[in-house]
Image 1 (cartoon, rainbow, N blue to C red):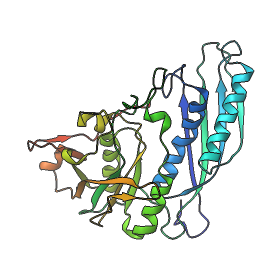
Image 2: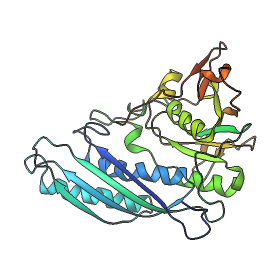
Image 3: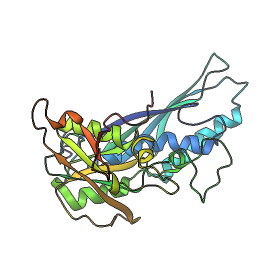
Image 4: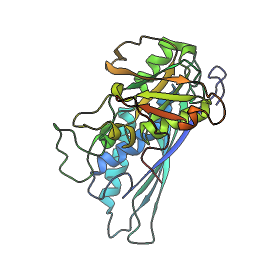
Length: 292
């Protein structure tokens, strides 16, 4: 991706599939919104700014997906582009031959790295860095207590806002002290494990510090539910402000990065571990949601 100072670009492609990322009862407006918001979350995780998007859709057969619904879907994706300052500049539409084929959208986003910091990678964590998360985790497929969706499968995973403003704030404020960042899409455990492996460190999380979303009682839900689309980032800077960005988004310190200490020693526990209040340490590097 380059260093962000020589005209480099950020490129991301992502997809949503009926039955996997949304249900057949999900309103078309929310399908289009999620399809664009997912890759934008990755642009945010690199500290970037979106420039434009391309969308390819494979539609169910005519008998199940009408022309009016096609128009609604196109409008929904363009509306999301307007909301997130990422215009949809083109794409393609096809239909399944199989009448039972699912609705699928693939979205490619072009972004620009931070002009001074350059792109933020997941591989830059250093020993001694503190680990932080934005927002709250867990329960993304369940409606919050004050929300009524009126259809199966509602929840934060359809209504999240990519943390583009928060990522820009971090890149502006921390500069080169923003060592690594990624979005949490497959669960804190699994994604933190990926960051640890790419950075060749061990990430040690404190279960008592992990922020839980409204209605979530179990830390394991926050570790493994996935589809949170919050930012996980590493920096030597401490303390961090309690809130960041124009939306006053909460930030919580949840752990620290440690060195790998040799063969067959205590860090055989895993790449990412959680320390429970009773002192137990558990490997959670593969705890999460599988998009597969």
